Length: 318
Image (cartoon, rainbow, N blue to C red):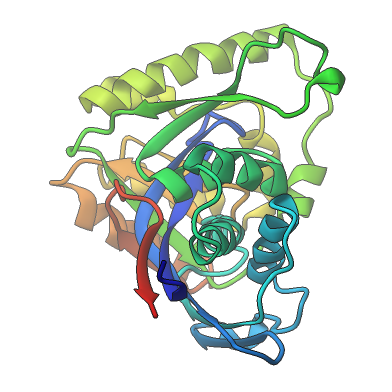
């Protein structure tokens, strides 16, 4: 049997929450990180990083990609082999586009392939969710598309279950709905973005979000503008987080005036995500960039698509 000597993994960026879908829905985008794992005969782990912000990525054993790689081997109760890891960055760091999810998924998928695929994709997914802490980024990063994740039937108290089971639902996304991301040149940590959230919400706010998440699912599937305009509203996280993002209201107003159905915070932010139609997408791109520029903030604004493949791998054997 041939032994896999190296494997290259391409993992898409993700945008999570999409307004009312806090911590349960996310979509893969056409923006990528690439990771190459090469098995070494001997020696120690080595990491090299290229791309924007490469100097900010740690290259020792605390690297998140390598931590996920090691966690996989702990899971299958084997010693991780020495590897050389090449990271090529295409997803901005700490901007709400799932850069940590790409590392977790890339590390687990790469390790599974080097080990001869001893576990299933579902097991890889469950490991990724456990490492990330919630499913909204890692699931679409692994599987592609737009995905809604919910816990399975709880027949026993969670503390008695050996593992958490998940139900993953693919959410159809109309080709007429275009995601536009506005990535500012400042960061917002997920920890800080979670710190400002209330510990409890009212029944009215819970009902509001439930209704609007249902409307969002149908709006994404059909591309119905009026449904999307209403559906992108949220009461669980955005009212609290937008104060952390300078220029939020200005950019929001500009995006809607240019034709966007609405605008939300991508993940924990500070990247902002507008949904629009094909005809207005370039006008929305220009309007969001100009609005943030007037606030004194430089931003990269891009019209993207939904990635439908998720993590992709190329293997080399010897």
